[in-house]
Image (cartoon, rainbow, N blue to C red; front, top):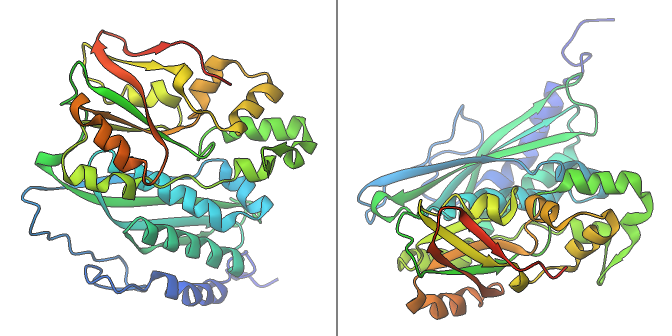
Length: 342
């Protein structure tokens, strides 16, 4: 047999053809993007006349083991929205405006239709978040990654004026904690979900409300940028926490200053049916549910009591938003009251 790259599992002609087919999803009329697909790196103009001390806000993300289910059950394009929405949510909580995203796709063999679907999903998710997919990398690695497996990652660059960074440092006693709803698991807890599916194969077709189990767990991660960007611009938010792995406690505690505690009334949480289903069928404890899942809260906001009603009303134009707690003196940072109504 002739020793060629193609015989080793990497067909350069095929990958080049795929790049040509995805160019439509990368091309943009954004004047800040100074080049397109093809150069060694992407160029982005970051001059903003209204930002005096520009600070880049950078984040990398991947959709975890949800991506394995996505390819297996036909949600490849959808899981790209998960990844981009999660990525952008992580920088907007610091007051950043998302600018540009780079993606990486690692696979054992590049199926043109799947790769196009992935790029299309990422591009559309970026557009929905008012940022641009400017380029990335598709790496075919036979022998390293199994055929049919796609590993996704992405990185975002956002920008914020140094004076407008939101990091929780302005939070004070008496402030109000608001919860913004999730639509389900978002992108966390899927190793536990896959274990349930392995132990109970028929679970994927069981009904969870109006959805099947697989439909319920594959709903894409919500995007919160548009619901808070005007509040950020008006400087009405003292702190924001994106509730991902680690749950409410593991994420809200990142923004609570020392000597303060966010007391959260767990009985106020509005819990989607999928979490009740997982807890019941898996016999999962409340503590484990709270540590593993968002339990219905995708974003938490900390605001002054005098404007809490205005903030709640604004966010509620996009997603259900309600009061769940208050900032008080204390050394534990997070304090839970009552129990979740699973």
